Image (cartoon, rainbow, N blue to C red; front, side):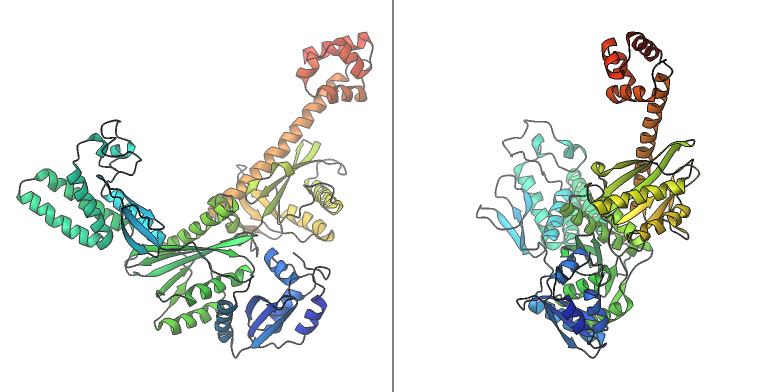
Amino acid sequence: MYVTESENPRLPYLRDKTSKLTLSPGCYIMKNAQGKIIYIGKAKSLRKRVTSYFRKSADHLPKVAKMVSHVDDYDFIVTGSEFEALVLECSLIKQYKPKYNILLKDDKGYSYIRVTNEDYPRISGELQKYDDGAAYIGPYTSSFAVRQAVDEANRVFMLPTCHRKFPQDIGKERPCLNFHIKQCMGVCRGKISKEDYNAIIGEAIDYIRGGSAMSVEKLTRQMEQAAEELNFELAARLRDRIKAIEKAAESQKIIDDHIKDCDCIAIVSNSESACASVIMYRGGRLYDKADFFIEQAEEPASMLSSFLMQYYSSKDDIPRHIFLADELLQEDSDNIIRYLKEKTDHAIYMTTPQKGDMLRLSALAKQNASEYLSIRMGRTGREVAALDELAKALGMEKVPKTIECYDISNLASSDMVAGMVVFENGRPLKKHYRRFVIKGVDGQNDYASMQEVLRRRFENYFKQEDECFSVMPDLIFLDGGKGHVNTVTPVVREMGIDCPVYGLVKDNRHRTRAVATGGGEISLSKSRSAFNLVTAIQDEVHRYSVAFMTKRHKKATFASTLTTVRGVGDKKAAKLIGEYKTKEKLKAATLEEIKKTAGVNDETAKEIMKVIREM
């Protein structure tokens, strides 16, 4: 987005002031007309960085453009190094909390584990304590840890999680599915006494409080005692419970036993906002996770470094290993590692895994961020991840919100048509689909036809008369290879449209193979979600254009059949087709209706009806 002088009359003054800035590193402090600080940033070179905000024709992300439109003036602080600028930026953001900076807020609060006070107690997680006579364990700072502990305890000890009331509902209904899949002990059958049930609840509480190792040790002693007393049924139940606890504990371990403590961090963004997800492993187990929504005022390249500084500046528990789903700028990585080493007084290893189990864990963090962002967007996590993957594969600075795709369709050299489909946030926007009849191209010429279609599309954009054509796409796909891209891109650029154009290449089985550039191809084989999205777009535009071509061809064949009747030319045939649309409707028309519509006499109308019945 561009910020004009009509939106911010102070731009000429800001450009002039910036031209005199030093090239030294430092921090810049943006202020609005009331003198309030609205954004704080760091720079390796103050003049170069600040100039990027105020130069003419600067294309910003929407949030950045909005910030620039409110800047009335700015201050700056020169520092001795980029590292000092990084630390100062973090300190100033924490102090002033500017509107357009990343301000980390999550949904964390104190959580409790609740054990109800009834004959057959239930265990659940709660966000606050109630005066209801129940026993509460906690507080815990992590709601995730509480949910995990409750779910694990209910599963391991096969506690009921249904809405039935005990002992009132015992024997009234058959056991539910959880009993049959061994996820519930089946209290509803009436074969478990209140005393035995409460003993199991006690074991579950010990498990929550003491962890799996202590529970296994205690249950092992009970199992051995039961075996000595020849109570083999109880010993078998205890053995199964021990195995369930060990299995639950094993499922929570990270694969590489050499890395006990680590954080996996990922940020997923769209054109409007972003979500950062931190998944924490401590002592070899999934310990906690945190999710933060970010108002995306920064470029993607600097957003991750800003998040890391904000997040870890207030943390005391910083692990040695930090795995990132995306790479940092090298200078930012070096400075952040230096800052964290000084803060923790131990070594810090910050890497972006390329393969193996650590790659899988960082991918899990990215999936988690995608799911949370999808909730805010009203989209699925898969759609969010696909757009993010596509932007990275194509080297785009921001995730494309609106994608248009074009395809030329014809039967031999006749009925040349084109289809345009639109995807918004990864989903078809069918009300913006459009069809084109090729008018200025003789014969079969896909390149010239595609040029005509794109020219007409953007001529309509400048007219701003059609809602569909009034939206500037973030990305254009053409159903074709690099030849199509090289032919169409100059036409688009001549019209002043700065939108990336790519081709969609199919294999000999008519399946999507790659994305074509003007000079080669980009493989999406390693980006499964992006590949599936691109395939869906290509299949949709092909379906849409072929359906339009087939429809026009049928009409042309229909019309040519009508003109075989003496006294019926192209105009009269067109009137009949325009009025009745289909052969079925025309066959149902009466003699008088055909006479009136085509403007013919009785004899000609009868001939028309005869030809129609034979079709």
